[in-house]
Amino acid sequence: MFIYNEQRFTLLLKVTAIVVKLIYLLSILGLVLGVVGFGVLVWIDPERLTFVLSDLPIETIRFDDFIVNLEELFGDQSIALKTPALLVAVSTAIGSLVGLASIRQLNLILKDVRAKIPFSTANTKRFFTLSYITILSAFVSPILGSLIRYSLVTQFDITARLQFFPTLSVLFFGVLLYLLAHIFSYGAHLQEEVDGTV
Amino acid sequence: MIVIRLDRMLADRKMQLQELSDLVGVSIANLSNLKTGKVRAIRFSTLESICDALNCQPGDLLEYDPSSSRE
Image (cartoon, rainbow over all chains, first blue to last red; front, top):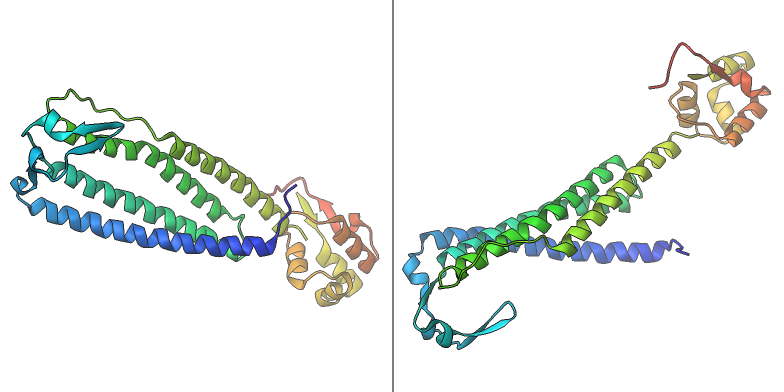
């Protein structure tokens, strides 16, 4: 049986606050890198970001589960990295924005929990927002990843199709948050009943 | 809806809200909310204390008004 331990809960809140701050800083860094990177890449001549594979100081690369010998497979074909790099910058910026939006919600939830008013209508809304963001990320993130891979692969004589499948672990987490939001909604209703009882 | 007749009972007993608050151990703010019908529920223990302090029955404090309904 679960027994509420206030000391342990306070410690957990402190650790969570530190982790949230770290993620916040990483998201800010990601957003700056994404936006600045995009701004810089747009002005770079595509030729400067085109490389002959056999000239690269590496012989093999790992692509998904395959180890590809560059010279054996592609000879002296070249690879243009401008479009994939732009896509990476856009993906980083979008991911960071999503991270910042999530952290804002999480911070407000933590603030209410610290104030000992966790079961509020505002917190319920925040959990719903978090769940929608997470569920959307489960679909958008693979699409962006797929676009980046597609922009790389189609430069060679490889038949490729745009394929994307939602990230199941993220989707599952989003659904869990959605269920948690419903639990909080019921908790907020019970809290209102208790607060209105003399 | 159920209407609380606490103000009437207090007037009959010539008692102030502060005095009742001291007797039943419920804050003035909560008793004031009860008096103005702003509460959602009342505990049996609170009702018992108020009845004891005012020397009355629950029926003297609570009244059912079929013409009005709670929001």
